[in-house]
Amino acid sequence: MKYRFTLLLISCISSYALAQTTADLQLLQQAVSAQQLRQTVEKLVSFGTRHTLSDTTGARRGIGAARRWAYQQFKSYSPRLQVSFDAFTVEPDGRRIPHKVEMKNVMAWLPGTDTGDRRVILITAHLDSRASDVMDATIDAPGANDDGSGCALVMEAARVLSQYEFPCSLLFVLFSGEEQGLYGSRHLAQKARQEGWEIVAVLNNDIVGNSYSSELGIRQNTRVRVFSEGIPAAADEQTVRLLRLLGYENESSSRQLARYMADIARKHIPHLEVRMVYRKDRFLRGGDHTPFNEAGFTAIRVCEENEDFTHQHQNVRTEKGIRYGDLPEFMDFDYLRKNTVLNVLTAAALAWAPAAPQNVSMSVSGLSNHTELRWQAPVAGPRPAYYRVLIRSTEAPQWEQHIDTKDTAIRLPYSKDHYLFAVQSVSEAGFASLPVVPLPARE
Ligand SMILES: [Zn+2]
Image (cartoon, rainbow, N blue to C red; front, side, top):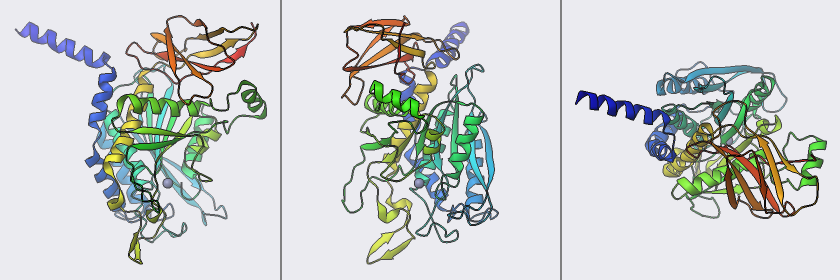
């Protein structure tokens, strides 16, 4: 009896360690709690203001108290999370920084189990808030939705994902200084580029917890926007010429990430659909993913489908019977839960997948109605069990079909003239890397 029990235990442990199947995505999904998200948002609001220039020493009010609390929260989720402040000094800029200020991003690092795997996936939001006047650092600026929603999402993702192991690392970041000019994200993006971080994806979440559209009166809690750049901000002139030549204006790595997220939502998340917006951000507006795009990284912004401008960047007040201010009572926590699940499942699927294939190329040595692709295995991380070749018509928003192969070359009966192709590395359990589009090769 005892022997049988031990055997059973061993098989349970080994299946847990090896599992990483779509069943794990189901468990991750169930672990995300709307109640936990609400508590985090309410706690963040209780700091009165989280303005970048607000008090840093008080125990209860201001950005200092808020970031110290967030730091402790991350620590409480798992001893495996390495929590730190990423501090830097910003000089007066003649715009939204009137005097020298020390800013601190709050970071929680979940190290990968494979020390040779240098990949990292970021889930981010901004901790600072603002009221009507972006320079007012003392008035109440609750910032429940902008961006308490994103912060609660990042913290909940850290709580849930830190119960699992991944070969590569995950990094959870609460940026400072977003409303004053994207200071925290620019600082980290530049550091990541200088230090040669292998960033797979930056999932930036800003304004993700309201489902009501001011003026239009639309209520919509089953759709979320994912913004992604088309022509990469970091592409030099020669690269832009090549992208035009190949018809790859819609094929940036960030756009591939947006497609990947749309696919995750379609397959795994009930009542949530991704609207892929073919823009880097909302019209003439910006966010913390942009400095990462500018530094050459794959980065997208997740944002609610409908925004409510009576509760964004507004002093808390009542005017002509209308209640203004960014307060938790105007949020939809089940909608925020679904947006959190979208981040959690995307990060887990990418982190359990092998790294993307390398040197993906398409033969262009002669005219043919066939397409020949070639690629190489990734050098680090888990070995791909097989590869997935994706195919779609040039005018289709999503990949339409796929062919799986264990080879590192394939000849397809589809013409490169009106189809697009990409290759993913796939794990035994079926987790796929981001797709890589081929570049022309003359041999
Ligand atoms: Zn924001």
